[in-house]
Image 1: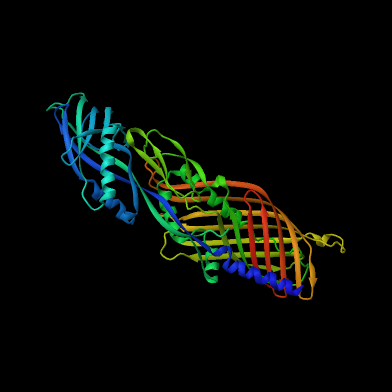
Image 2: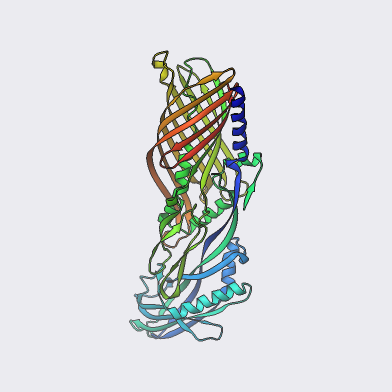
Length: 203
Length: 309
């Protein structure tokens, strides 16, 4: 019996030492990184219709997101647009305004397409409040196309021009009662990347 | 690819919940989730840790009524993940339209990200899991007695994971067992004991400096065994029945736009019965033990012990 017990104990030592606690497996996992890129539009107008353009190197923004999160650019497999929001960040007016219009996007010298629509948007309601816009497929397609090019050449520029194209304001601004505010539009993107892990999975 | 590692690494690995690199990424993936998605994402890990913590109290049901002894034990405790641990119903976040529920990977689920199509060509991705089958913990513990058929148990293990974001790990527990068979007739051939153990497991620090993972567990059990001795060797099969409970919390910094800031996800206490069968084999001052457990989550315990048996 002593021999048998010694054998059992020896087996247990082996099992504990090199068995269940020690099987490591390499796993490749698709993880998700979220990032937000915002463009600020300072608006001062004495009429209801205006166009305010802003130029952005979106590739640079994506690279910054990756750098901030210490993720190698070569690990990125997919980049997609999840949503677009806007928010009034600064206001200087004695009363509220309701604005309607679009934010458009164009790539390089291409044609501008609508990406976000806002309708009767109260500036007071959007003050420091994230408001998600109604998206237009044409503008989203430009962004997604830019993302695809980024995956092909992550070190090149992606120059996008975002423009607020306002159609209507209530009440209508005048030289005596100009509309004066700053707002930002934020593109929320997701980056899917692969990471390899060596994990214990003993059983 | 499977890689076999050496004995030293084997013991060290027993302490880990997940490998260090994975743990940092768990925190990263958590940060993009609001609390409800985070709850589902981590639930199997919390439950498995709670299950593991409740293992390791059973030993011989024979507890002498007098005479001092102390034993040092190294216990490995592992539990299997179930199929329904692998996915949870997650909801899209961050203003994604339309808001959509989808089966997304939990932290132990399939490794591929899950894609959801939205309005106007937008897409939302839920991260993949780490594709794990099991979770193992290990700890040294000291068992000592006896005072009127009562013995105590203390377990403690701590580890520092270098410069990893998960930070420090800590596992601790206290238990007590009492001989019931001492009150039975002297010629009763079986040993019976009842016990209670309370354990905790902490891992990581969040940005506020609080513990990121915190799991607490207790078990109340009764065990029966019979000893066969020959020379200096002994074999003692045993069976046990336990009432287990565990609860947990996860504190992390969420970057989800719908609920940014510090998030504290609580996992309420859950209760369940567990049936155990095991074998304790000893030769003089060394003992080995193996135990299989049937419960809400099936599990196994392996142990080496040193002391007077």
